[in-house]
Length: 300
Image 1 (cartoon, rainbow, N blue to C red):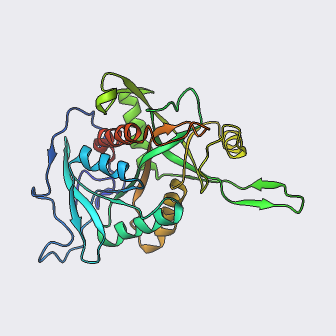
Image 2: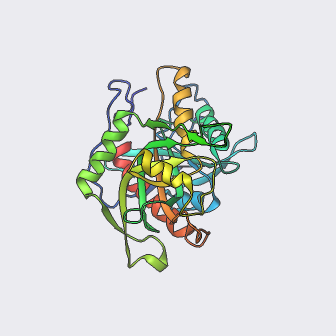
Image 3: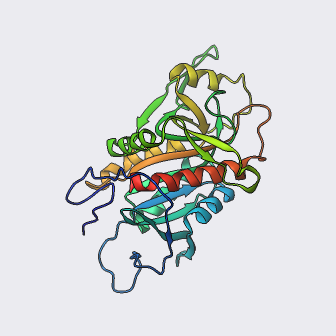
């Protein structure tokens, strides 16, 4: 099997598209998008993009943005599938929602995607908390190919805590693709809001580092925020899942020569402070899903 437009190509393992983005038409799953469970299909089919979301608002935003259709597997799992047309061809997309928040459930969702759809790229898409006042304002979107996992730590007898961060970067073709997007659109990239209440407003898209762990941070003075900004000054947002994505990617390399790339797209829904709440989830999720769509011609 050969797919000329994908991140991984059987003839060129570093092929990806750098085309500029225009208005892209969507195609439905009734178009010639070959599903792995299609009758008579004995070939292992790689889908182009597997998306993991955590909240229902996040999945709904991705489904609406990419015009995906619900599909229930015989075992009871739900996936949302479709084809999205770019200048280079149709990108086959499958999305799912993890069972709960956190690193472990994210890794289980990734395993479900790998076993059933074997995507060429994993994307974690949804909302996150901003920890940089200038760049990570509510509604802005952070595109990340770098993750700092902050949970590993040593606790000394006196109660002193010494964190041991783990820093992982996405594969080089993904980094190049994201760099190409910002080369074409500027840093920050400016986009009009995606919800009705914000359609007349612009939000900004930045490349940046995501800090990830199991804590819900709702305190501006929290030591985790201080640790992350000291560890890497370009940590712009935090979430509870990106560390699981980067860890799963590393451990998945044992399955063979093919290991999908990964990317994290986080809309800022709060500032990880005392005002943290759910009021901006829809705005942040819709903006993140829209940025994912704009990235597709570069990534797939």
